[in-house]
Image (cartoon, rainbow, N blue to C red):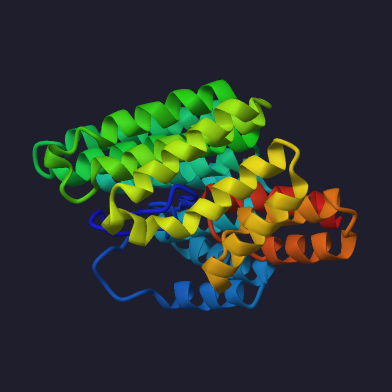
Length: 322
């Protein structure tokens, strides 16, 4: 995702997601997509994880050090809940990386592999390696380098909050804002964006801690950041109902949570974050509407992204759906 676009505080990975959306395995950059990648990705779109993995494994049998095949096969294994196997492939990609950029990409994939197991500590460990790469890029591309550092820090924080390590999450969300604000002039990603994202995160953390007053204080601050920058708000306002729904859910106002999360899903449409679908499912469960909850979980379970929302949604829905 371009460094010259305002990004969602959730998508992550929203993410956040890569940068907040799914992180496509890289390697062999600059040329046409290999046939094996096209075949495997079609299998993924069809929901056939075993078939996709088989295509990647066939490629790896012929080219064991293929970066795209190792990264992509690792991603599929994570989606299947086979993290230990996935990380062997990501480590091969790290070891075989031809340059620092490719190595950082594989390290980020490794971080997300740990995220699929709710391992905040190891996610942070590998995300720090990615941040270290972007530090080396500061002289050549300072605006993008500082933005990416902030983005990666936020990505680590997102994994930690979803894993329940709220203290570590707060530390890294604050670090993310600190790094992002070092962008010279904050021309491509304004201070208002980082302020909105930080208040958004701290509100969610306060809600998870049961501190309703602090959560609502942070919600008000997030809204003020939106109101103070109409241009930024044009990109980010659609993520505000996600925040208010999240806070309502975790502070005991289930009916408001339902209203806000339904609004958030409607605003995101077919691209709705799978984590958001999980939140809506949790809300329906609390209201005793099990069938509607299961439908939300089924939708969330189909994600094939390799980012924080998917890292939460795939294991969570696997348990819920059986």
